[in-house]
Image 1: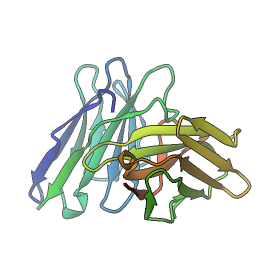
Image 2: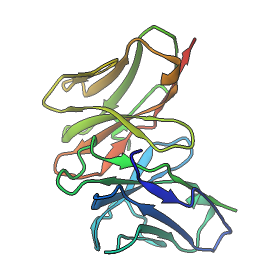
Image 3: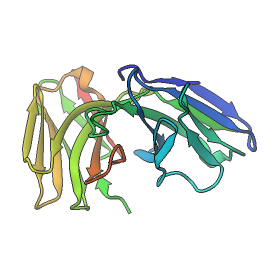
Amino acid sequence: NAGVMQNPRHLVRRRGQEARLRCSPVKGHSHVYWYRQLPEEGLKFMVYLQKENIIDESGMPKERFSAEFPKEGPSILRIQQVVRGDSAAYFCASSPPSKGGTGNTIYFGEGSWLTVV
Amino acid sequence: DQQVKQNSPSLSVQEGRISILNCDYTNSMFDYFLWYKKYPAEGPTFLISISSIKDKNEDGRFTVFLNKSAKHLSLHIVPSQPGDSAVYFCAALLRGSQGNLIFGKGTKLSVKP
């Protein structure tokens, strides 16, 4: 977990509210990935972003979920109108620009735990 | 449909002995296989990886074996230490993919002193 910073670490939202999760990648990393871990499950890929671009969003739910990685500032995963099923741990990861993501260059953050009540 | 399967949810081993964690996969287009270690309330930490063109990779106490014909890989930890107690995830990367890791459900390893 070499320097990927996620906040908040824990977030409680009521059904229907919005959740915003932030991720600052390792300094110098331009590739950011978001994963979700539901209880008793493995991590599931959601989206892969580079600065100002969504490269692969094949794992993102079609509605209510969006992600961005602006030129300046952290990457944001936004969940609108949260439901109980959104309760999960959300992990951000980053990798350096030259190597992309071949696993051993992907560094994970400590996660953000979302609880929807 | 699970492309990466870890069929043992838990494993208990005595300190000093070998721990063997298993993983099966279904997709022959996987290019890279990785093992991650995860403590509660923390993010996964990369342990060791293996390319699909190899059958073994070793790093200190950790060795990963890949049997492509059986679509099976295993992680050997020897000797096991109490600090190794954690959840271990097997993950795979599709050829041409970048960062889209496909994870198994994990195996919880307990190493008893």
